[in-house]
Amino acid sequence: MSPTNPAADLAERTAEAGARPAAGAIDLEGEAQTSARARPGSATEEVVVLDYGGQYSQLIARRVRECGVFSELLPHHVGVAEVMGRHPKGIILSGGPASVYEQGAPRLRRELLDLGIPVLGICYGMQLLARELGGRVEGADVGEFGRSQLTVAQPGRLLAGTPAQQTCWMSHRDTIYSSPPGFSALAASTASPVAAFESVERGVYGIQFHPEVVHTPYGQQVLTNFLADVCGCERSWSPSSVIEEQVARIRVQVGEGRAICGLSGGVDSSVAALLVHRAIGDRLTCVFVDHGLMRKNEGAQVIAAFADNFHVPLVAVDASERFLARLKGITDPEEKRKRIGAEFIRVFEEEAAKLEDVSFLVQGTLYSDVIESGGGTGAATIKSHHNVGGLPDDLKFELVEPLRALFKDEVRAVGAELGLPERLVWRQPFPGPGLAIRIVGGEATRERLEILREADAILQDEIRKAGLYRELWQSFCVLPDIRAVGVQGDSRTYGHVIAIRAVTSDDAMTADWARLPYDLLERIASRMTGEIRAVGRVVLDITSKPPGTIEWE
Ligand code: XMP
Image (cartoon, rainbow, N blue to C red):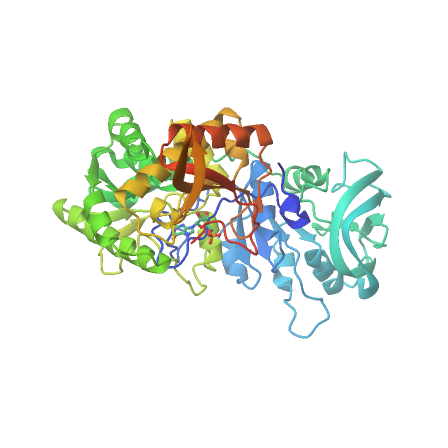
């Protein structure tokens, strides 16, 4: 069930799981800030990736981390001081869409080459190095896109341990025809006379192909060569090494103060809460607002995990009556979202006001949110994701964001290390407004929510039993406001229709409908019609995104 479209396929290991909630969304896991508050300390060895706008720039940072070296993505225009402030062991220049000789194309800061820090240019990054140092880069009539064959003339340090003939992934039109003086050309490809070069003396390395994508089988080896052999990294970083460091950092930030955290049941807010709890113990209070729009037993699971298991002080508010009252008669999806968002703020504020001396708010902001916001440098203009339950600015809290340096899968690793139950660690994204936006074209009444909840429970149960839960980005049911005629026993029925929606995706920006096995679908449909009296028909949504969206409204 891997994605069938090539772009999704290429990025299949990106899986940031960074669902971009719609405007006005309740998402307890957003809100970016300017400073990289959660960066590991200076003792952590780091490699900086300068982003020239390439499609896979984030992926480079991810791959470096997978090699055991902490890595951050910075905009290409940051100053040398900003880079040096991180004491990097290496600098990587990413790919990008521009041509090096175009007017206004992003440039290389020449001073970066004089810092005594090894530099690796990838694709556009390599072309920048070539041009800057006196090589020949020109536009080619034929671009090189996709799989290509690399012939290694001499492995040098960069390609050491990789075969003389290997597949690699290319995506460029401009081509390097000759290396800069003093450089060794290491390899050529079908359309690139110089596809890899190095100057050990200068500490400058370049590859035209993309080592970060899965279609370059020796890509990770090349990155490892750069990190370990060239940069001398010890490669001891791991997501869980963040735990101790963050706990210490949170203790310093919060001091003797008290903090509050809105738990949504999602992995980000859960892991953030556990880290903060480890740091300041019972001076953290979690607030779980049950808006009555959760899935079956979801509230109970969150409460059991936090209050019973981890003994985290937890205020669980059953606000379902209030939310249902606010949703009475409302069928328009955006109006539903707005009302749920506004009610959420009200409930959260009321609960926060009951707690004394709370001055810190814990949020599960991820590194992908920070990057999306143009942040990380402390200098860029930040566009905050104002979807933290729509929490307004005048809630006078200082933010604690212990996950700001981590990607989603790294957060999952930290969660597992902290003992978060697997069910929460691997939970598929669930929209803040919950089941209300899955009752399509109709009011979210208690009765409809109950039908949808039961149908969803059957779907999840069967998907989990089939071992497909983690492979799917999301799997859920939709209850449209229609009825269909059927026959059960000897009687005519006029039941609800349940639509099954299951998608694969890397980031929710695009999605493909999942090819669930027929026998699984049959089991699901027969259980739904058999076990839920009100359901008369089950249909499958086979729309991708685009043109559809993942949710129905
Ligand atoms: P769409 O339907 O736009 O969804 O393809 C993309 C991702 O966002 C989630 N989603 C939401 N999340 N509040 C949220 O917190 C919302 O209002 C909302 N609407 C959609 C959706 O589940 C998918 O993961």
